[in-house]
Length: 213
Image (cartoon, rainbow, N blue to C red; front, side, top):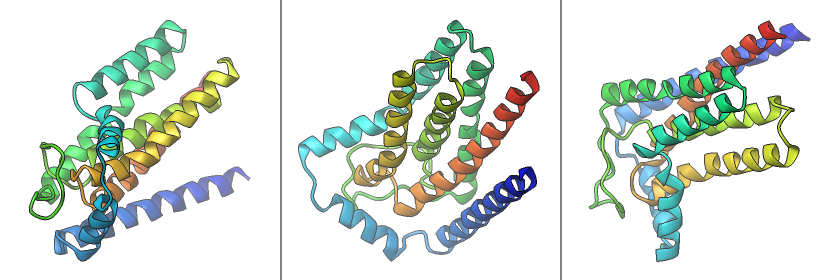
């Protein structure tokens, strides 16, 4: 059974890696695809001030220094609660941002232009992959794993944090496109790379968990 699980994980990693590689090649060959423009048009078609505020709020936690404060505060809470290993891995998860920055520099895709989409705020760095999406998948995805593992925490707390985390993970890609900060392929790339980073982080954490047990 263990061997089957290991094979499935490796198949998943292989599939995600291949998918990200193919997506990167697509972006390099066609940096302004019809698919991306169509997605942006559909998502931005019915905009409203209330929706604008909601989408900005969803993305707010991914900007500096908010993201650094979020990681630091979360790690500190785990540390003060006696979960030293969890605090360490929460901090280690933030290193995935370095991978995102490296890929951004290599692909060097410009952000969506205001002449093509409705842009609700200036952004820094290149566009592919979405650093926001990658951060949310890794940080909040790891929180979901921790809420499953840490049975000592109150059940309602664990369910609440896990549910909120999942909501943010799946809403931030829409937020980034709606705000005109990214194309569809950017957020998809961030999601795939985020999953790969999350798998690596989770594997290391669970391995350390088993060693303690």
